[in-house]
Length: 278
Image (cartoon, helix red, strand yellow):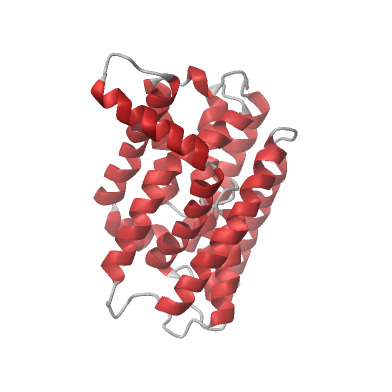
């Protein structure tokens, strides 16, 4: 990210992050695409993306604060009585297990995630490919299971689906929601678990990047990055409220169409040289 990132550009990127983090359209892809089109130019970078995601994840913590507290306390109690699991304590363990794939793969492929996997042709391709997979899942998924029926195997599969979002264009929520639909979960259940599952991974990644870039020459500018994170929090909270209402009554086809159009547009801009692949 350019050190000349302006306050106005920070607001724009924060808005983009807040608007897209919870929708199955890939917030990292949007930041990757929009960054080079701003006056300062250039890829915002994995560090900027991860740090601003702290803002949107703070919105999740606030919105689901009662659920999170109940799950956390039940999980703590389960440590003292391992043989007496409740649905809430089980959910705590499932979130931990579901976080393992992205934690392990994120460390193993850290260099590629921050460099070669940010190639815009890969981003555009993933937007299109996972749009088609989401369309299939939304059309043919049984949509009968609730989170009460979530088991260890499905929890781990959700985790691997979330890990695919390490590639810009896949979408963290899109990957987990698609996996949930393919496994027969309702739209609401898949979306809700997607939000809860993201908490440990996103916060860990964001604070790791914040620590790692602190004082480094390549660090994103502190003031604008903080502003972008704050904007992402406010906008992200509003999007959570809207999105959970939307998925209870409508399908994901509008997001499928949007992903296809965005992916095709990026490929076209790359072909004519308006966007650079890296």
